[in-house]
Every structure is written in C-alpha cells, then in structure tokens.
Amino acid sequence: MTDENIDHDRLFKELISTFFIEFIDLFLPEVAIDIDRNSIQFLPETVLTDVTKGEKKIIDLLAKVKYRKQDTYFLIHVEAQSYTEKVFAKRIFKYFARLHEKYDLPIYPVVIFSFDEPKRPEANNYQVKFSSLNVLDFNFAAIQLNQLSWRDYLTQQNPVAAALMAKMNIPTAERPLVKAECLRLLTTLRLDPARMQMISGFVGVYLELNAAEEEIFKDTVDRMGLAKEEKYMEIVTSWQREGASAERRETISDLLKLRFGNLDPQLEAIIPQLMELSRSEYLALLMQTDRSELLSRFRS
View 1 (cartoon, one colour):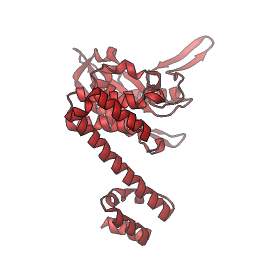
View 2 (cartoon, one colour):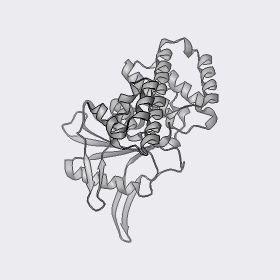
View 3 (cartoon, rainbow, N blue to C red):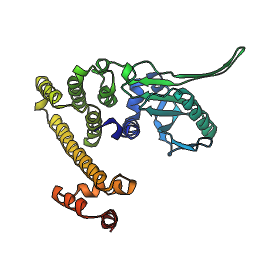
View 4 (cartoon, rainbow, N blue to C red):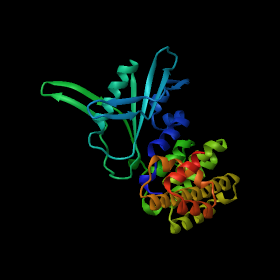
C-alpha cells in the first residue's frame, strides 16, 4: 500500500481516541498527573471554516477533561500531521484561537508529527513581535516520531508504544526487528481481541515488509520464541487476512480505473460490494457492464 493511499488522520485519530489515557501517560506524563481520568469526554466533531480561503478543517481530536480534585475543566486538542508544512505552527495557533473562542476554556495543544522525512526538528512555536513588544508567544507540545528512538520504548507496557514504534526513527536494516518487537510488546499486553487487532493493523500498515525483510522478520520471531504463543498466531492471521483484503481492494480499484478512466466517489462506494464477489465474477462484471449499469446494479 503506497503512502498516498493511507488515511493517516483516520488511523491516528482511531488509535489515540481508543487509547487516550495511554497516549497521555506515554508522552505527556506531566498532564496525566493533573487530570481526573474518569472525566474524559470527547467533544463532537468540530469543523473550522477559513472564510478567506474557503477551506474547512475538521479538528482531529478534542477532549474535555477535569482537573484532579477540582471543579474546573480544560481541553486537550490533538492534531496528527503526516507531512511537513512551513506555516504549520501559525495554523495550529489559528485552531487554538478559534477553539478558545468557541469553548472559552484553557486548551492544551498537542501535535504528533508522523512523517518519515525530513528528520529536522519541527517548529512548535509561533510568535508575533515588534522591536519593543512581544505581542504573542504561542507554544504547543510537539511529538515528532522520527526524532524518537524506537529502542527507548521497548519496555513500555503501553499499547500506544507498541503501535507508534512502527513510525519512529528506524534504520532500514532494523525494520524487520522493529516489527517483531512491536509484536512481542503487543503479546504482553492484556487487550481484548478488537483492541489487539487495531494495534496489529496499525503496525501492519506502517511496517509493510518486502519479501527479504519478511524472511528476516520470521527468523527473528522464531528466535524470540513468539511463534509458540497463541496471541502471536492470532495477530499474524489478522495481518494475512488484512493483506489479502487490501490486495483485492487495490486490484478492483485498478480495474475500475482501467475500465472507466477515473475513480470517482460513486465508483469507490461500490468497491466493498465488488470485494464480496469471486475474482471471476467481478472480472466478468467489470468487463461487460458499463458505468451506469454497474452503479444501478449495486444500488438495488
């Protein structure tokens, strides 16, 4: 699966919202100390509109939390950024200002930078200054994964660590080892099958190995003794099933593009139904049916 086909925002939002406390514990322990863990409330999807540019932005994650042993609340705003952007710090300040205006609560802004390149530290500060006046000095907590060493998280009994090691600073030669270590850590956690599958799926997306790397990964897993564990078999079976599904989806998507020239939202919407057919069935259907007939068939 190419990087362009990955919905990074959705994957990170799903991970962090599911394991929100674990995320805060891992990266923001100073905040974790201050919050009442029973008070966390995810606010409804917030859409910010830039009137001047005609653009809309859906806030990735906004949680309302209560200070421990107090009756006052604050917001934790988490944004996942999958590419570098020169004016990003300014954009985060604009989000902060709009959210502060809307909710009238203190806001703790957090950004998790997930891109592989560049490796330079990203700015986490936006200032407006005049020679004699510091008008604005806005800061946010920045978690830049490619600045973190995966080895520092090996002993963390934390599902977010098991997932995000896959996006940290990994030398190419260590990719199979990191995937094995993510798997090892995951098997030590007491997670229900759905949450385990979420983490294993996240790792599978971001550490997709080539054939040579796959052989090294299997050898590493064997040497760790993981192959004998039931949880290992559950995870690997899940990866194999997801891989086959992803390959079928990509094949059908390519066929639709070949047949009709582009892949618009209407055609994309019927891909899951085409995936339920056998290979011979969807091939015959795509080659013998025009666009309107195809859409009509799956509407009924």
